[in-house]
Image 1 (cartoon, helix red, strand yellow):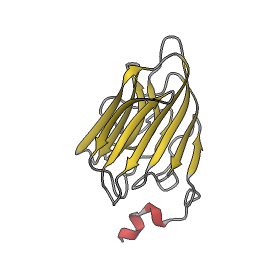
Image 2: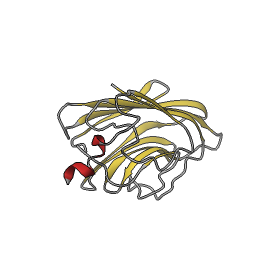
Image 3: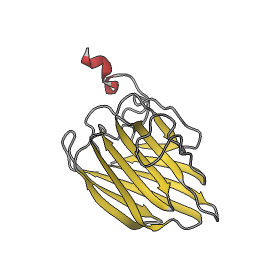
Length: 180
């Protein structure tokens, strides 16, 4: 019975791939179809356009209140929020605000190895490191029933710092996920 709940055992067009380009409007992508970032090092890179009056909202979210991650902008700062089963949460925020115009943000998830182990998490704005922290525990198997969204967090929110859908108010050109 447990095999039926393991989405990694189902056929998927993402299996074996290590680069994914995602675009605004891609929403409600089931976990079994979304890029599998669990138990591996990976990067999330987003090309953004920040208007003169600033922007906020979700760039990419996977999962929900039961577990997952969210890359978002709030109060001008870039954030990465990791939710470990709603028992342990890590929110990493940039030390500087995003500038206006074209901005490239990146999040690196450097995995320590082993199932459910910790990571070193690093945020970059325009290739400059702006924050780094440790995430001590990671979800080993499945985030839950919530899905992946680009440009919003439509279902139960990953982060307890915002309310859904927390749509991104700037422009997202593309979000790339690279599995290392």
